[in-house]
Image (cartoon, rainbow over the protein chains, first blue to last red):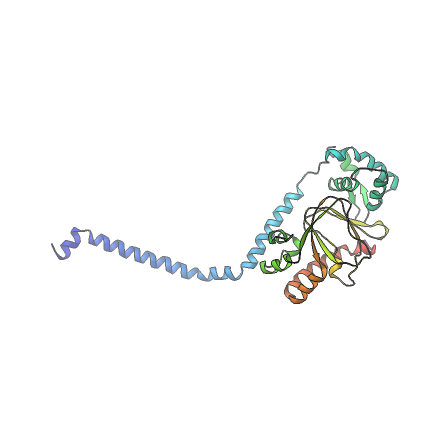
Length: 145
Length: 141
């Protein structure tokens, strides 16, 4: 068997069609890739900018998570809240934070620095915006002591 | 102890820097431990180092007892080490145990002089922080 009969008998037409389709499909993919290459190059050129924006997004996420944390006083500070309140009443408000630390050390409070830090984080002691601090009565009423 | 880039990469002060610039900054830093009550800078002393908070909390106080506190990763103490006349304007005390990054001010200035683009980015941030804190120093809050 020779010629067109042989081609038909051995699925030659189908194979030729398949081969042509594969070649054209490859060419189309290549064409699409080349038509988009300017975007890849642009991305590469601005990689630093993209890197910075991704970094800023991650920072913003971390910051918003931190904002929603609910400050609860550690157990070791719960007992000293009353003592610090008495000291602050004695100093008067608004009070300088270094003076509170100085007084608490003289009174022998254990870990006075970290205790004051816990009170600050729990917002029991709040800044007045002028460099001095206030005792927050509202938080004292509501906080889980 | 050398500082990994991914640590300083996450800090606000360096957020606009490229990876190569971060590598240069990281080479100047070392990590140090602080303990509760430790005084890191003293008002009037010659300013030698800048400290960047990683996990500690700090109080910085000035004349007449004015003060502010720092609690966030990336907060900075001792910026006077990068600004004339290189004298600390406040006393910084650690409120908790923790870790800070220390960077010699003179080394930072040398880097800024040799790389103006990097210097511009950092000095812009430093100036913003200094102007926000200035009222505590001068009492004009």
